Image 1 (spheres, one colour):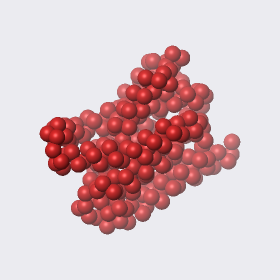
Image 2: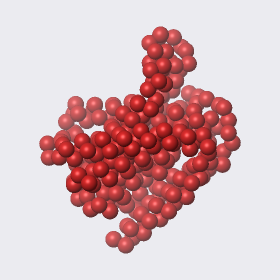
Image 3: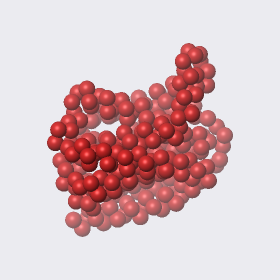
Image 4: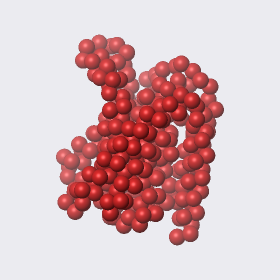
Length: 264
């Protein structure tokens, strides 16, 4: 993988991790367009590195929220912050279980399955359209909601389904405040990403012996910087109820992906 390719894919990841248009789907499309012929395992390593970068950008954007939550948790009382942390933990269970049980099967899907990406992008578009039509509320995410949103996050492990789109849409369709839904969506993925990376490092599954460290680093920086911008922008867009525009975008890109797969 060339340096310019790493920059392009890093920017794609940073933007699409927070914008509800599927970062994994766009990465697969980007690899197909750029002609990335990496082995699935090496390609997966690059994808994980980029997700790590956007996880860090989430921490930077929500640093005050995270700090307040940590201070509240350390009081060891059943306060609002402890309850929020418990909801985050609940939301992680479905994705953690499915990711652990079907890890190899999921990894095989990240190998240029462009037609699948196209259909999943159209499914994402449907979710975004329905969420955009939902009424505004001031409701907080409940414990029951957290579990349902967690299942949405697990389904979004498929390439082409937007994680932020699926979780924010599910939360909004459950009647939650859109801004609070976005905040919960962005924060709930951070522990999963760090947990996944820690597991892969310990087990040796993320081997980087044959990988170009400089390429990985450049992709990381590109994803981190673009992630900072996209996360801040997305928070404003959710407040303004602009999800329908992303719905249209996902349909267009999805149809293009299906067309590309059919023509190849």
